[in-house]
Amino acid sequence: MAAISRRLCVAALMCFSSSAIAQEWPVYGGDPGNSRYSTLRQINRANVTGLQVAWTYHMGDISDGSKYPVRSTFETTPLVVDGVMYVTTPFSRVIALDPETGKELWSFDPKIDMETPRNLFISRGAAYWTDGKKKRILLGTLDGRLVSIDTWTGKPDNSFGLGGFVDMHAAVAEQYRNREYGMTSPPAVYKNVIICGSLTADATPQGPLGDVRGYDARTGKLLWTFHVVPHPGEFGNDTWEGDSWKGRGAINAWSILAVDTERGIVFLPLTSPSTDHYGGDRKGAGLFGDCLTALDAETGKRLWHFQTVHHDLWDYDIPAPPNLVTVTRDGKDVPAVAQVTKTGFTFLFDRVTGKRLFDIVEKPVAASEIPGEQAWPTQPIPVKPPPYARQRMTRDELTDVTPESRSYCAKLLENAVLGDLYTPIGLKPTVLFPGTNGGANWGGASWDPETHTLYVNSMDVGMLFHMVKRPAGSQIPYRPADSGTLSGRFWDQNQYPCQKPPWGFLTAINLDTGEFRWRSVLGVIDDLVARGVPPTGAPNIGGSIVTAGGLVFIGATNDSRFRAFDKDTGKELWMTKLPASGHATPMTFMGRKGRQYVVIAAGGGNKYNKTYSDSLVAFSLP
Image 1 (tube, rainbow, N blue to C red):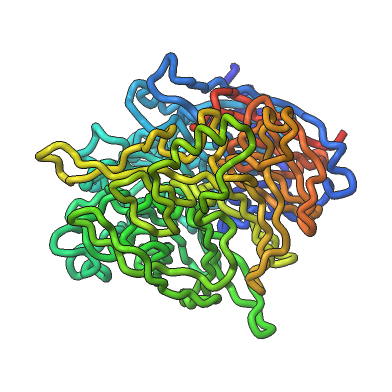
Image 2 (cartoon, one colour; image 1 turned 180 degrees about the vertical axis):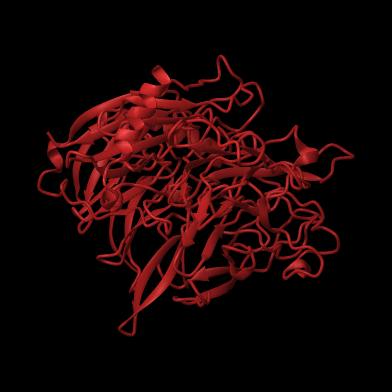
């Protein structure tokens, strides 16, 4: 009876008029092109200060590393489709909620192995597919399965794969089942094709492979495979010296894909080859490493690509979803794709042809001192827009927020080399900006089609590594080592970055002109504010959304705040405290009763703090 009751409840909610879908949030990025823009304006500049908590749902999946060997982070962006909200949890569960009350309708548990070593327990969301009759939630699990779930019942669709599941290890990770392979971000959907990237282990040169694949939405049948490391006879294979392409791991799309549904193009943000700090065994530019790559969404055929980092030695993979935008050139609208990066650069291309919409120059960079390494002699630098993240520091920029922090960081800096962007990590401790988390990260950017403005949050946390020899007989001779820091990040014992603040920004970029509209410091460190230090900005993981109500909503910061900024001026209009830091991207929708809600996952944890929560928090006006 309980199951029947749940189905009736779901059915009642799904009878919500299809005309309201445009006011829902049916795709991770709000739309397939990842604009993260909403036409809703009920919540606006004039009344945003009146926002209150409408409901809080506790999903229950938390790991602080005490019970399970892996910690968790709650990074989901919920979907709202046909009046039902779908949420994924760090343990790869899917939960259906009434979006106006937070009441649970059903939940599905794929039962991942909780004892397997991983980077984090994590899931950023799911995808929705329908052919007009069937309605399915598509979930990629942390252990490498793709599952199709019936939205009415919350059960796997038996006509999909084997009992509703497809094992994604086939042909790419079958022989690496003892290594990390799975999905942490939602798949992309184009017509009846489900397009999947993956998270892969990258600590050894070979496997798992990062190939991107398309599956039939009804049956789970594999439709196409794009080799991210080209095989002999394929375009780009000659960018790998000798046989170094064979079995090469990573170059995966672990972040979110974007789809131009009108033109049938899927855009892949691809990552660095393995291993990501030593490339002496993979000499060459190494396509399609660190490439924004456009494919035919139905066939997987490459249309064009651009490599943002040649022969990556810094773990500067593309972490952020591409944004499909429209810019004005010579009085005409041009369909474009913008790609923000860890390095602080924004690349802009004609999305059909791959033509550069701002000039990009190949700048000579330093050679590597590591024996056997052959750093690429140039790197691509866009002339516009300017970088939104710090790319170097000088010794006179050493932090002075507290005497203790200055003393700690000065000691780290004593024997260190201060590198420029793309200085290869050497045998001495090397300080580089941005660090391995950026710059921008998977939170990426949001796009306002009204003003042609891209909003990107970033942090300025450097890295401090040096290269050390591996034991004799190792596959590769060198590896990076922390140089007396926590996790290789250039910060003190309290995780205060070692250079003078600001440490975090929200930047508005006019993509018509390539100029900044404004920059606002993003985030605070409460302990420093208590000592009289002005707001410094804070490390941040997660992204923003922008609305027709004139607002940019963002959590992300490591200070347990959720904020709204004026999209035209960058002024902070509203701020509230969350149960924990909202390391996620929010979403917004209009409820059945005509009320707009803004929702964010507040899970804390991640690698930036020790406060954990399982709270999904919805806000609305009274």
